[in-house]
Figure (cartoon, rainbow, N blue to C red):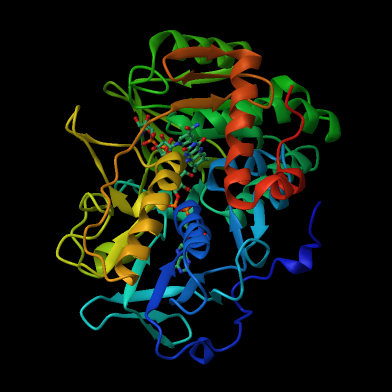
Length: 427
Ligand code: FAD
Ligand code: NAD
């Protein structure tokens, strides 16, 4: 691993007071060091001089993590340290002040942000990049009993929990099928990518814990008639075939209705089926961070429909980036799905727009999303996707997925970061 574990501190470690930096400079406060916030910071530091603005990046942890890789450490096929990067390694400390703390409230009318320890930071320009949280649609028990692939701490727990289930299996009396029954609720991209990793991990776990493979039951529960609803049929068929070959029970056209300490209830037509399972992973959808709606911004599933220049409606001093922003696809009349790809593209325009505001210009640039394609991994060596207009399958898709992951690291921290944290086993 590139970093000693102790270098990744969590939020208890507050860093030095921010008020010491340039008192009279305009204050740009960036909330969240996800794809959107981190890339905006890195782009902005290239565009401004150290006297142009006081830039403060507020994040829960001293590390940035790539949410788009989290299904791998959740399944245990990649160490979580490879998905995270010390923020100090990519920011220019002469231009950016990192505050490690949790935002608890945005007071937009007072132009202030409240942090967990009670401290407030005021701003001239605010960027909200606080990311996603699971959408549970009021389904009973999900918040209490299901796991979510949401951040580094969550996926560490999932991996450990899965291993514990295998370790327990040979230590307890019958009935014990629930220990090795794994339910994944929702087979969109996150559910499918997690399952793709997990089916590769299961044979290793079976070997390590002396468990026959046939004792392990993996269920995917998806409300739509197919997995990955809306995606290209040929690619969906390929993924369906992959999971059937790996003995995943695909319950399509089936709604997860409830999660309990014992397992789940799912509805197939009029039938309610109960499944006893000690592991339920919810990948049924995401919404924008609740703080955005709580602050009084207009939201749709937690996402604020931003103006073309990425500012919040009615707020010339507030930009919103990534999964907290809702951007319409004017051709389809539907919002673009929340993706890292969109967050990264937005950050380029956003940084240039902040620079313009700092320079006193008002003709801000309009953001136009340019989808480059989508690739979903099915474990390390398989996958499906569309690159431009071309469909890719199998090893070729897996290769492209790694290119995409490495490209992001390159944009963030150049070749040095690719070599340190990248996926270099390309084939
Ligand atoms: P995030 O990346 O979620 O970052 C938000 C940041 O804010 C985090 O650092 C968090 O710690 C911090 N934060 C949150 N709340 C607070 C708070 N209160 N105070 C302080 N800090 C806070 N998209 C793709 O384009 N391609 C993919 O292949 C892909 N794969 C995915 C796989 C999985 C398993 C998942 C879950 C998502 C995937 N996505 C993918 C979607 C992508 O991860 C998100 O769209 C992207 O992470 C959004 O970026 P963001 O900057 O808005 O927020
Ligand atoms: P999603 O909304 O894309 O998929 C959720 C799935 O859960 C849907 O198929 C939905 O029908 C299903 N579902 C919802 N409620 C259900 C219920 N009660 N019972 C059964 N099924 C139910 O969410 P996601 O997969 O978490 O993805 C979130 C975002 O991240 C999306 O924008 C996605 O495109 C993006 N993402 C992209 C990639 C990639 O590009 N490789 C990978 C992962 C995620």
